[in-house]
Image 1 (cartoon, rainbow, N blue to C red):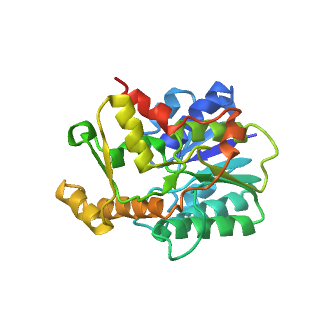
Image 2 (cartoon, one colour):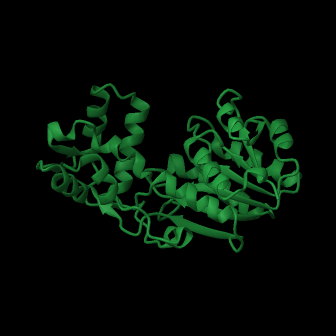
Length: 291
């Protein structure tokens, strides 16, 4: 049984491969990589590597030969039509008789064009609908916002400024560690009973940014104030700090989505897939701010 990891050199893909290796699955893993140089790390671990690109259908056809299951990690190229890239991979997989596809989307309460994150969600919605109609059995991992990226909102100088400045209002978020998503993916890839399932991959304990400020205050001994500015003010502030406009606007869109609770989805799916409760934000931040 061969499993193709598409997106193998990214953080999530490489972590998933590491968990699979720990499960003695190295002979069953095939890594799809765009960049041969980046793939050298995987080759050094003994992983079979096939070169391919979501934009190159012929390369995907070659990569999916003899594959039983594919982990399709969503493209990070937000400037492109990611749905087209993903559909290329699904079509190639179907042509070669791949039996099952696991796709990584993102955690959300609804699929509505009015969502502040629709510019991201639309590609996931289109991909997921296509996959469901493809005739291939599937598993959808709707991944929460990475806890690993929380410091992008908190800021490295928060203990100096003593202010958590994010337009997230009172909204709560199911933050999740990327490494625990990878562990759950490896568990699903090596067990049965996940066909045509949708898993909401988030923390059991969603938190607000006001609560995050309180956690950092308690752990650091500094009094941290939470300020939720107008979104436009936040965007301009980020740009003034040298953040490229595209990324400033994207960060703002996520913050506005947080405020609207669109990434606050009650779930115990990750707990079940891991066999334990996932790491909470309080525990994660303690590694950064405890005195």
